[in-house]
Image (cartoon, rainbow, N blue to C red):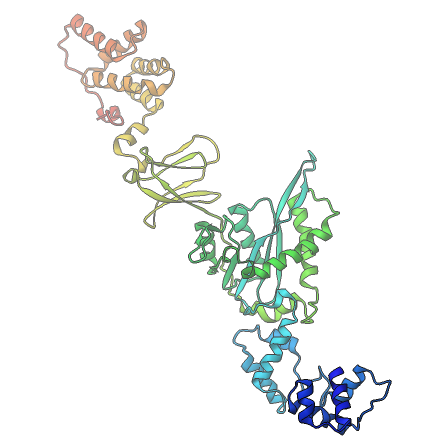
Length: 503
């Protein structure tokens, strides 16, 4: 303004525009423009003494036309357009054409897009990204936990909070689980899909171990059990890039909002079970989803019902049953181990790698995509679960040996022989240790008469000769003492046949 005052003073003294430009060091055109402005409003030197610099600037450079911030043409309601844009197939081109159809003198396409982008920049951070309806759901755990008190002991245990946010509507789901382990992680997804009544196209999780075995910028490795759940629902898994929180800004902001609306409001309540905590969280979720979003003027629930629900894929007929998948190797005893219990597979797969699928009720083993074994899952009792069909024939015969079977074999010859078998089995710390002795006795008794076998058995029990060597000696002595030439009695070999050596 000092330069303008000096310019007007020099002009008032008769100095030419060229000379004023040289004196002030500015362009001649600038001098001429300013003097023209002063002449148009009748401003000459000397200036009034009460004319301040601000008043002089306003007189010379008053803005012409429409006041700043006022649009010359009719504008659409940008919030409604932001909602419409989330619907499948809707583009800015379509919205602009509809706008011009009702406002022929409205803005051109480029200015329309510019104004809409300006409106988007004024939205809250959770709404800045563009997400099509039914496209993505963002999932994560809150860093904050909710305390749950054991009613009996008073011990406090903290539960995790699972949070999911749909991309287009910001519709939010949350629940408390005890851990972030695979069963809880997948169970939360199953309940999430049931809550929203459909399935989006993609899940965007963080890179926690329950979802992603190996985080990678280019090729993340999805946990196999998590991938099987996604396959059941027909949804893809697209993990957020490592150290790129903007990839999942929806859920990051949803987590912060849930922490304030859930944990903040429930901080003074005491919960004695996970069910109590989830009932309170469900009420807090209603408040979140029924809260009117400031910029858009609608609630998350309204946006979900009007825009996103119809775009979700249908749920399958049954909920996914959690199953844990593991890659295991078959041991030399043709068993695989899971949770300290052993389950058999066909013996031909010894030392092969197989896939194990475990649910709450069953354990299945697959080799090259084909199921080769299925067992009822064991939580107690014997450590081995063995299917006889999986055993080699020799092992199968041995597995069929039981004390009762040997007793029946002895009884088929006579009561003394039955007593001998019982005595042999009882004389061992474990009955199985007497099985081979019983098989040896069978061999010795195979081709002799019943009365002779009965006599030898009675004598063996009497003297305590409960091994094959003693029985053989008794048979030799009995034969020498009797010198009998009587024909041997016929023994029913069909009844005497036993496993393995019974042939």
